[in-house]
Image 1 (tube, rainbow, N blue to C red):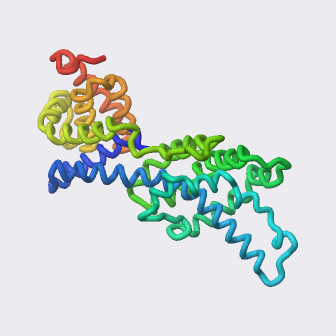
Image 2 (cartoon, one colour; image 1 turned 90 degrees about the horizontal axis):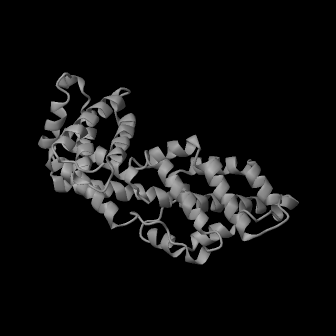
Length: 308
């Protein structure tokens, strides 16, 4: 699912590209934003698919061992609990999940075979896996809990996963932490309710999609106005010394401050100060904070901003 943290980040990327290249229309930039958000949402499904692919890889390994020339007794009669995990079976047969990949399936085994093998090796050596495989009880909640724990403590924090996500898609490299939280939320939904689980939608509601398009459109359409505000409060700075990314972030922040009356001012300021830490220089967050604070005071004085 896409939240407003991701939306703001994508708007910054698309707006920066629009201003730098100057070779596309606002409508083209809006389509680029929607495409970027759609591609980013695919990471959510890919992370869910990862658990299925890890299970299938272990099943394949067990079958290979069973069919080798001189299998051991353990290889002939392996513990199948992991590969028959009920949560994985429920996820595999979930209607929303099946529908998402109906036209364009995705497989880590095809796209990232080395990573998949390495991650499975890591899992097979964890205490969580060992405790699960040797437990004397066998209920569905243990199946669900295994994958919740493995995803939270082993898969999501993995540097290998971060690297592979960056390699697989330019649209994924900044969304892993956010989408991982949504995967954990989805896993939790399967607990005791496997037949009625819905995958999280791309947007929480229609308002988020509208927020994304309005934020970008208003920024691009009012570039001169917002640049004028920024220029008024950066007179003591040589324009060449101000990172252009800082200017773009401030224009988008002003757009949100002016055009989104339901969003508290402090929320907007905090969000774009955080974005500056990701996208711009070490000094940018303090600089942007100071400039936006002065602009907010002026806009309130002029009656353009009336919210807190």
